[in-house]
Image 1: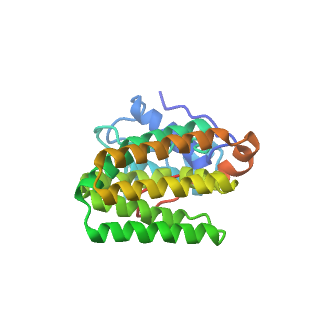
Image 2: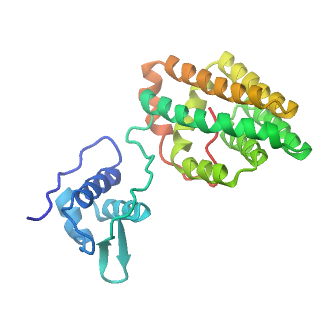
Image 3: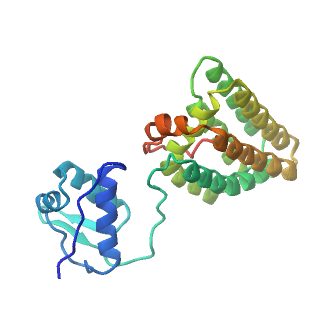
Length: 259
């Protein structure tokens, strides 16, 4: 029996919905390894979407290593492997999803800050200090500070000196950048939020500079805990009007900036 597909509905991105249905069919065995997927035209008809949407969905499946394209032939299902990590959560701008992402970063960033305190050099400290100043300048000038925030937290990660942690943060940055933009937009609404974030960043830098691993870990974890509190204080109007727009996926070559 051929796989059954449901037409997509308004809401989350159409290509994400198509990719999710195809991935489900592959994972439940409706499509076997080596099977050829229906053509773009056939899938567009079944899902009632454009061929461009189908093409984006296939690209998504390729990034997850579920299918592979053969020149002039089409897309074929790959041999099953260990399931890849997938952090592109539908409706990633919801308070629940963004909170969960910050919880994930709390675990990583706290360890990164602790290691940075143990291994930092004078040059690392200078980079962190300069990055904090650049972030403050950007915010005072009316910017969202996302790019500067990336540089600040990348400086801490570099000081930690663990390439596996850095690569993990790089990977997560592809999927969590949008959620971080949401948190920064929320914090920009209130001067007291901006002041809190600045004080939290300063506390991390001072602990790393002093070589106090325990204090650095605590400062980073506290920063995340406070970020969650700020997220949960945002009113429903913010999430409805701003969340979805700001949380659109954005690929970044650096790791995700901290809220």
